[in-house]
Length: 271
Image (tube, rainbow, N blue to C red; front, side, top):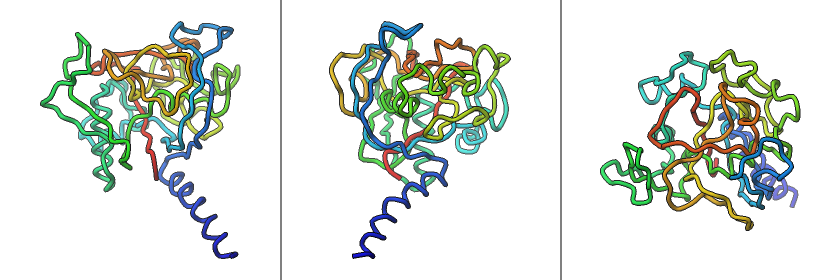
């Protein structure tokens, strides 16, 4: 009996230790209020508060760095150069390609099927110059982008305040007030309760979802609308004011677009 208990404990502890050693943090599933209350300062009209449940997943502690991107992709598109700086000037397509290549490198099943010769019929953008058909295999164990719901849930880490750091935004984020108008090495600011760094500021982060309006109803592991013209980005950047850094703040961008304020971080469904 006692051996069964020990094995059960090890089965719980080992995946957590493996995740931590690999640079990923276990985000325990749960239910939260996604969006912002009507009383929150600077809230957007697209932040309708609603109940969302997400399953357990694993999120990278840091935004993908230029060193990581260069070593895998053979190039560094970033405007602000530095190995420990977050990679930026990456499109949504660049990000999903990185996810798949890293999965293949680590012997994992890629999360995405990317058909470059086939246009996505659900992409309604008049400005997207790529429009690859990208589908998500939710049973894969490889790396992927977070859903918008996963991203906000991980950022909040149990908090319903505008920022996980309370009023001390400068302690958790590089933004307009302290960034001197450029990115900074990842992991220098205060992490949230899950141990995630730079969820506020430094660079915006691509999410999987097409951008769309929230409904008022509760949702279980939502992955965004079935179609759209823009993908979601979250978290704010070095070039944004406090309002853009809020946990509920949302931005939409052309999937093929790139700029010096936009990067990404990885998640996995399992370790």
